[in-house]
Length: 277
Ligand SMILES: Nc1ncnc2c1ncn2[C@@H]1O[C@H](COP(=O)(O)OP(=O)(O)OP(=O)(O)O)[C@@H](O)[C@H]1O
Ligand SMILES: [Mg+2]
Image 1 (cartoon, helix red, strand yellow):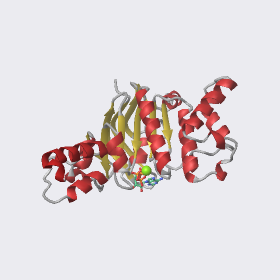
Image 2: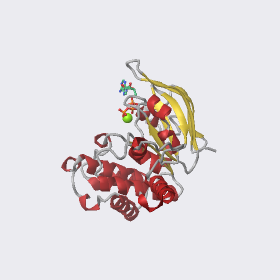
Image 3: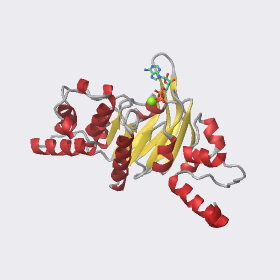
């Protein structure tokens, strides 16, 4: 059984824009997936299909083997948490605590349990001290963190995040990356969209490339150091790979994808050269 099973899904907006075309995709339980592609590729439209926010006009979506439809969408929303691209679409209550407590309260938890899960979620994104603020009193990045907390407070099995890193400061990005790693270690399936190839290549175990409403490629992080796929998906290579590509006479079979691989490669080159490098 897959965490998410998408079969031949097509979605057309009312103005006749076909945003996704005949997409089929299977996402295993426990996966850590990054979805990349140019603006307008259809990433957000696809992600909105995974918790019933949009229902497929053609094709089907199943979550943990349960087909997604009007009847099942409420139950599926408890299993699949979706963090929107724009926090202004998500953080809409009068205060941060009301916003984060909204979901757990609807699950019928006791007041103490609601407070406990909400405080833990807010703490995990560094927003506990902003609990009493109104959303309009927060910066965009802070609202993004609250939106993530609101989803985590529901303890979903599958966490979908539409561009979670945008507007976060560098330390906030590191914290969210660690948080997503921890959630994955706890057995949660994580699927996120991002334009950040450096983050995607070092965090994800699977990469999906999208363009023009279709899946271009599905594979390991090495897709992001493959010239042909990078060109076809309007991306650029991770910074570390671009740096090694600039070194003259270094005809590497495989470019390093991340800092760890680059460090190992430099160490190997030093050993080959003796101590003169
Ligand atoms: N409400 C809408 N009405 C009509 N067309 C839309 C609407 N929302 C999105 N689209 C179109 O659907 C296509 C896919 O958009 P989508 O937002 O899914 O792309 P994306 O990959 O998430 O882009 P980005 O990287 O900019 O977030 C685009 O051509 C876009 O113009
Ligand atoms: Mg988008």
